[in-house]
Length: 400
Image (cartoon, rainbow, N blue to C red; front, side):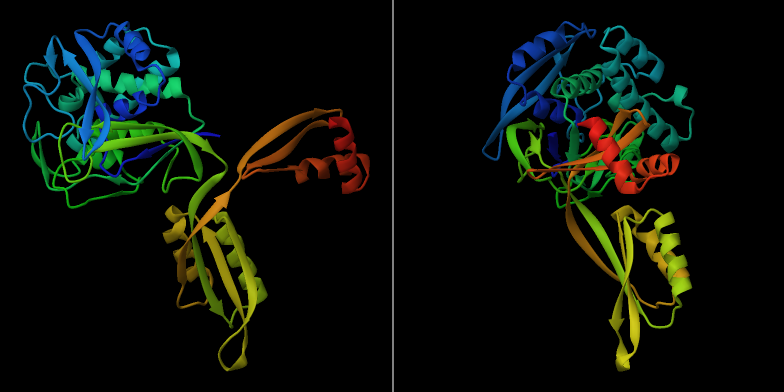
C-alpha cells in the first residue's frame, strides 16, 4: 500500500508541506511549470535549496507581483505572514480565485474544503458568520498558492494512506491581526481538535492555521510511523532557524498493514453474576470496543473470580472507563497502552447465482487471508436448506 508519512515534529505550514511533497516528485520543474500555467493572479513560485542543521531540503518561495514572500513581514510570524499590501480576502473572493484556475474538479474541491475549514474555525473564534470572515494571514495570495500546491501535489502523488506524527505547535505567543495570542492561536487550536499535539521548548508558532487545515483534510491517521519501506524522502524547510532542523519531513513508501496504538483496560471481580457480566460486555461492544472478553482468575483468599479485559482506541478510553465503572462492581481499572500490527482489510463483493456474497480480504506482512461473510453464507444455507459447509462449497465452486 502506497503510504505517505509526514513528520510534524517541527509543526507544519503550507509552504513547508508544499516543499516536502515537491521533493518527492522525480521532475520538480515540470510540476512548477504546470503550476505557473494555472495563472494565479500575480503569483510566481520557485523551489530553492535550503540547509537547516546540516540537512539540505527545499524552500517553497512564493512571490506576489514581484515581491518575495518573506519581504514586508511582521517579524513575529514564523512560517506564514500577513502582507501589508494585500487586501484581506473572504470566502467569496477565495472561491472566485480558485474557480478561475480551472483545476481538476477533485483538486478544486480539496482547495475549497481546506479554506472552508479555516473559515469555520475563524467564524467560531470571532463569533461571526462565515461570509463575514476575512482571512488575514491565511487569505493572501501566497497562502492560496501554498494550499493549491499542496492539493495538486497530493493528487499527483496519490497515496493510499496519509499518516502524520503528533503535531508540535510550539510555544509562547504570536501576533495576529487581532492582537497578541497564545500559541497555538485559537483558530489553529480548533483546526487541531481531536488531533494529537504538543508544545515544546521552542517559543515560536510552529503550526499555522493553513498547516493545521491541510493536515486535517488529508491525514487519515495520526500516530507513530507505520512499518514501511521508504522509497522517497522530502524535506520542506521553513524560513526560521532553530536548534532543531525547521522542516516537515515527508516519507513516501510501501507499507504492509498498519501499526496502531490501542488501549487495554482490565479489572478483576469476584462478586458479579454471569448475567451482569454478559450485560456489561454487551454495553461495551455497543460503545465501540474493539474486543471484550473474560477469563477465570484466582483472587484473594483463593476465591474464584473473573478478569474483564477491554480493547479500545485511545479516543474511546474515557467512555469505556465510565461504562466499566457503571456496569460492573470493580473499584479500580488497570490501563496499558499497546502497539498492534494489523493487516490491510477490504470487502469484495462477489456476483453469484445466489445473489451477491461478500468476502473479507486481509493482506500485508507477506501474507493474505480471505473469508466469506458468515451472514451471506447463512442466508444461502437457510434458503436452500443445506449446511453452512455446503453453502461455503457452493460459493467456492462458483468463484473458482
